[in-house]
Image 1 (cartoon, rainbow, N blue to C red):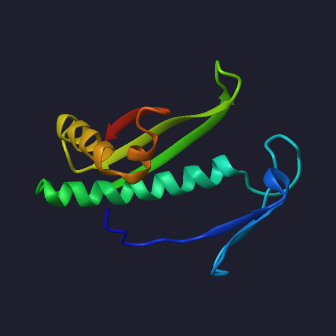
Image 2 (image 1 turned 30 degrees about the vertical axis):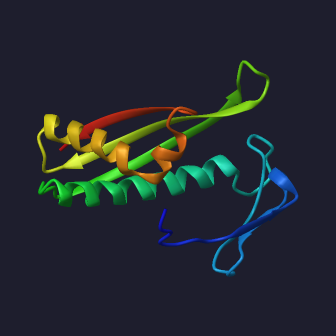
Length: 136
């Protein structure tokens, strides 16, 4: 595989510590959900990354398919829970709004994007990802 880009982040102290990009451009105090401590958690950070990546992949796929859409918005809802083996797994719902396409075209575009997006490819077969598409 040809690598186009690579970044590195470091976390100290797990879910209640601190995480930062090694280039210094972004850093977060971390807090476990429902603790009342101020800070982000890994699921929130993953949701931001997945939403941004998927929304950009929509543009890429639409261009390849010669579709003219007037906009898109992707929200990623990421959950964590215990799996039947006793470990932990993620659960994802992607809510995608497509502007300027018919419902059928929007559905096909989102399905095609799900095959292209690197986050979707990383999760396929390991994490339940449900796609929810709306149009305007």
